[in-house]
Image (cartoon, rainbow, N blue to C red; front, side, top):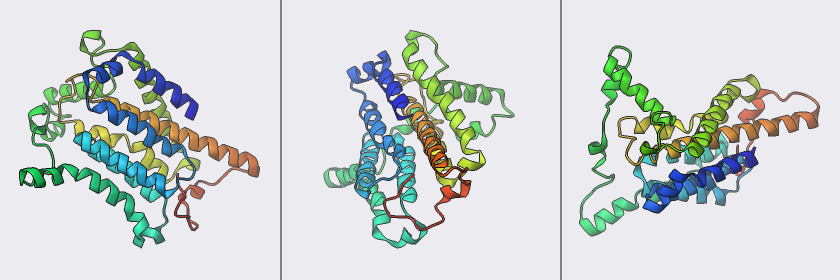
Length: 278
């Protein structure tokens, strides 16, 4: 499954819209590359703590570059931290180190503003100018036709089905990759709901991409489209193929033992090594 994901990532990288993002110098381009590297850690059975810390630092750097990725990257750091430690490790410093590293990177703009500007500015102040929807409107989606139409358009923008012409950023190559990721994610979600794959960790992985999408709902997604939805779709692919890889590992263990593994073996009810992972 890692090889399939690698092929799709290569196709994504050579698509005209992604190459255009690099040419225009859009800051998201660097975060897409980092997300592929960090998300690949989800495919590993065990992760050494140094890799978890490096992943946390890179996630924090992505937030430093693009603040709108805060929730998605924070969720990924939490997955790494909670997947790698047992409940008894919650009081250990090593458990909290990834969060500290991530937090330090996220707060770099604040340190910059305090030192050079003598002002306390934690996040960019321009986000409100890019808003074209509100949570109040979203809550009226079932009773208000205009709100429902906006919500449907948001869904189409996220799924790369809103603008099917080149003038609005459509690329057939990119569409193949995004739609493959979306179909794979739906299948992985169904698999996680099965008894043998049902675990808190697997569920956290499969819903992780939503942490990129939900906070972006109130804001415009059509500026330099599809720059705002690449990370979400990339996360869908990483999460889906990580779940497929986990299924493959379970099948191999089942074949080796000659019986079907029970689903609560995924809950790590026994003692967990500090370096164990997904």
